[in-house]
Amino acid sequence: MAELQADFAVTAAADAAAPARRLWRRLEPTALGAGGIVGLLLVWQFLPDLVPMKAGTKLFFTVPSDIAGTLWRMFATGSIWAPLGVSAGAFAIGLGLAILAGLPLGILLGRSNVLNAMFDPFITAFNATPRLVFLPLLLLWFGLGLWSKVAIVFLGALFPLLINTYEGVRNADKLLINVVRSFGAGEWDIARLVVVPNALPFIIVGLRLAIGRAVLGVVVAEFFGAQDGLGVVMVRAASEFKVDVVFAGLIVFAVLSLVMTGLVKLIEDRMSRWRPQQVSGD
Image 1 (spheres, rainbow, N blue to C red):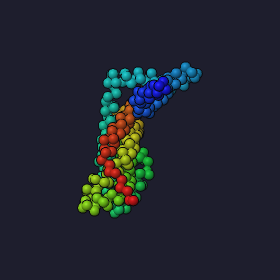
Image 2: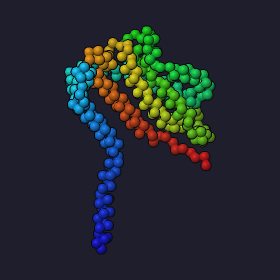
Image 3: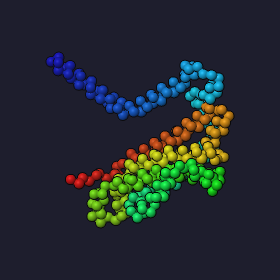
Image 4: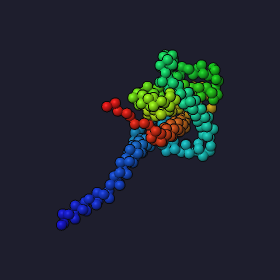
């Protein structure tokens, strides 16, 4: 009897702990990632106390507490809002245009062998060319204002999205396409019901890459040929040895990338239920 009571107690304890274990499994990646970031920040914060530094070295070094204070002052005084708005506007317009052009073109090239044969050499050549070499031409054509930045963001974000969409369309389930076509579906219905849902994982990967390239495009354009923007603030701060301001701008760009990537993840979670099940050929 005592053994049965002991087994019952153990089982009850395991059942009571099951929700906590499930919660930990769900939160474990986030907790470990946050712990790693906190540990890195602590090491960074106390590094000047642990490692002797020369006066000249300290001039080019800063710690997280100084960066946080600088960010707070920049947001509190409003000095960051105008340049951040310029950078965010160029990012949003360039990325939006890349999505509007890249998705339809990727689907068309994936579904048409004729169009693919016509455009593939140009896409391959432009994708293999570093975007930075286009910057002098874009500055000549569009000037130092907003549209030169939009153009470099567009070129940076277009090709990852276009190529990944193309690959997703080409890898769509051929058997499922034939099944849908046998029921009288036209090309539009095939693309809407089969091709695009099957290509969704490739499109999401393309969007994530495009976001990174778009942020890089904003930074490069503002570093080398702009009059306004957060990148310009960082360049001016570097010339004045304000390392904390440079890191503050870097963090803002990183947060922008993380927020956009998180939004793409939410879109992926919502749209994943549209994906059709694979049809087995057996």
